[in-house]
Amino acid sequence: MKKARKVIITCAVTGSIHTPTMSDHLPITPAEITTAAVDAAAAGAAIVHLHARNPVDGSPSADPDLFMEFLPRIKQQTDAVLNITTGHGPGISVDERLRAAIRARPELASLNMGSFNAGVMPINPAARWKHDWEKRYLEGFKGGIAANSYETIERVLTEIGVEHGTRFEYECYDIGHLYALAYFAERGLAKPPFFIQCIFGLMGGIGPDPQNLTYMVDAADRLFGDDYYLSVFAAGRHQMRFVTLGAIMGGSVRVGLEDSLYIGKGEFAISNAQQVEKVRTILEALSFDIATPADVRQMLCLKGAHEVGF
Picture 1: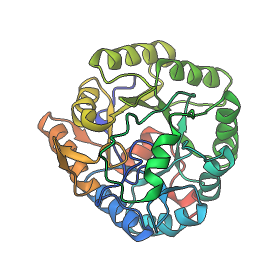
Picture 2 (picture 1 turned 180 degrees about the vertical axis):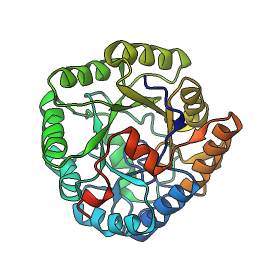
Picture 3 (picture 1 turned 90 degrees about the vertical axis):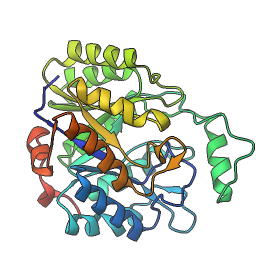
């Protein structure tokens, strides 16, 4: 692992698979997403990870027109690196998943490195739904799979990476996903430095145990040596303790309402910026320096905001 002198804070502001249900504080309209992203960047997030949502009912959407309603606005107001999802979700085809990133040609895009039985069960029978789609969306995970075949991964690397110069946040939900990345690295389709996002605590992926973080880092060190930067996030209640551990081990961190709707036990976060401020306070108390967007562009060899499509 590259021992970065500065910790990169990523904020996943809008949510999809990790927070399929709603919170009053989750941004859904283009204006709300813009404000949330700009505020998170001002709080210290050098990278902002973005999904789109239907502005009427908050349901996840892959419509590139929705992305283009907030991407230019965010770019005008902050120099944060904007990271566009290519992620999965029930009922969303691969073609749909890629349209926004192909159109936007971002500096950075997420790329899930393997298939798995992504789950957000069990469903609380006493839950109160804000919208009709929420329960159906959750139940869709029981009969589906987060499909990311080698063919799909190669397509993303080629159509978004090779053709548009976009680099990737390689999302690894389990140990085999690291080996998949190594396979594409050997073929020359994935190029260092790799920005590896290790994800813990989502049902179907690797569990949120500290030993598993050590396990993932040891495997990544064997596979990639000094050619990668580690980043870590954990779903739900595991968020803050796990990202702190990741930073102590030499990595970077990701927070945001996509990964957890809470700021503390039983307390909803009122904004993405609140989570960024909390993790930044923790990191600075531990004497870590926080990376700026300029630092990130240099560390990850990004093409620069002047070359995106928005």
